[in-house]
Length: 460
Figure 1 (cartoon, helix red, strand yellow):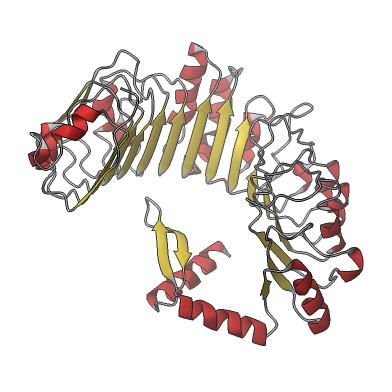
Figure 2 (cartoon, rainbow, N blue to C red):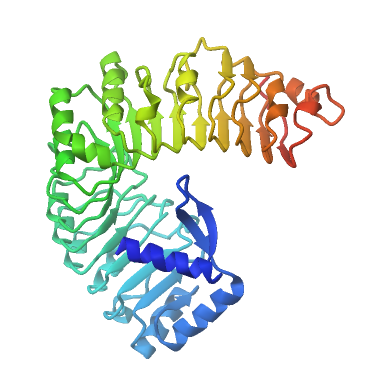
């Protein structure tokens, strides 16, 4: 179904009915939009054919849908005047299949008690999206288990207190996004019953009574916030369709080598890996790289937290196009290994990506042959940055922010003839003075068509 959907979307783009908003590092469409005239036409046809109803007033939506009796998809924009999400129980619509809420990020309800309860009357819903409800902490009612037709359920970024065990009744669910704002949410061990799940986003910092069983989710393609404390890495070996994995390593794993042998074929199929090492131990840093080294087919890799040395054979990662490093504590010579990644197009370096005593950052000649976007932020210890002629020949975008140790830009920027956009934000005043039009370093960046230079940092 996903392949057919991508083909349909690509065809709409080719016909100029849909515009590409953002693209991924591998060329996939991540975000899209439509022209306002096309949108007006779509809304007109949706109303005409009773396909979709959109209103800003909650009560008029319910009333109008009641009169029409045919509208099965409601998109409700909640404004500050609304005191609840839907109208009273006698006005709810039993025939609605999709219920989407927008504008919840800034909405402050008058009370939290029973705020989500009226939604439980929509018993034939297939899609329910209540995202961004963060101004008040609410309960996810146990009656959610009665909505057995649900295929999609998202309470992302909402203040949800608990996840009821009745979630296990939703055996038709294909997407469950409970990446909520609350820490220490207890996740019941009922997800194993949802054997149709394709995309699972667990809460960040959740707890569980014992280990969550995930080995039954054979259709799973996306698994976010897999915790080494509350999940068993062995289960990943049975998730043969898994393509995206976000894992948190909070403690050292026992018998990791044996586990990796049994899960190796599955790990090789993963395309996107986000790894958080919060163990704070040397053994955890080594185990983090053992797991990463088992994912040879990845296209996107994010590493956050201490890790051991990078693999010395970058050619073993021919597909890697996007790399994000933060608080990794890498040694200075590891930059040379990164520069040999043949197809790396996006590189993001965050605070303490390298050891604290690292003062010099060098991009050597011939390094990063395919790099198009470089983002460097919060590298406070770096006092000197060198870009040799012949490095990063394809670089188009460069973003440098809050690197307070730098007082000048590298001379080698003048060799980057393909550079089209340079953003500098939160840097020292001395650096800002040097790159002004009459400054002594302006010649390094004068060839760049788009220069975005914001106010210098107040932290000098």
